[in-house]
Amino acid sequence: MDIPQKLNDKPAIQKLSQLSLGPTITTHDRFRLAPTEEVKLAATAISLNVRLKSSDMPLHMQEHALNYTRSLLDDSDSAPKSLPKFNPTHLARALKKEFDTLYGPAWHCVVGTSFGSFVTHSPGGFVYFSIDSLSVLLFKTEVLLVKEPGA
Image (cartoon, rainbow, N blue to C red; front, side):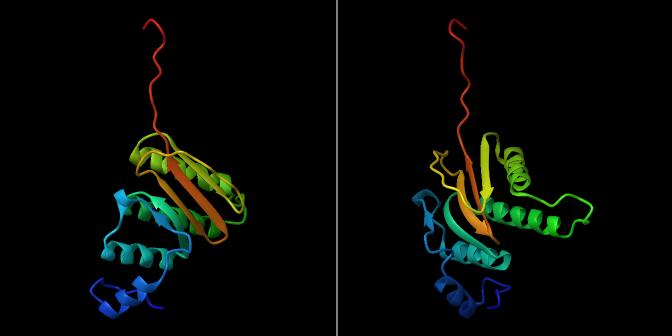
């Protein structure tokens, strides 16, 4: 299916809106997307071969996570054979550093083909998606300064 070049293409929008971003996708009420935003995110996910599974994150941050992850994977595929092959740890580190820099500290990232998780995250700081054969869990926690007694 062709992805619409403009969000004004009503037949294409109707087709995209019927697609699921993933069988288990959940979104939290505070970041419930408008229909046009949902279509835009679906188009992005389709064009990048991404399956968004769960999210509690604003649209622009989700798009950044998906696009940045795809660019890292594509860059590793085009790297010279003399360089070591890209691995999930490198992807997790790069994604964590990117989000720490842009959206403040305390981001955590898990990347792999098989893992379980149960995490607590800050509001607006969670996305879980798969891209190619990898799953990516990116979440933010709150950082509190610890005061020493008597200080």
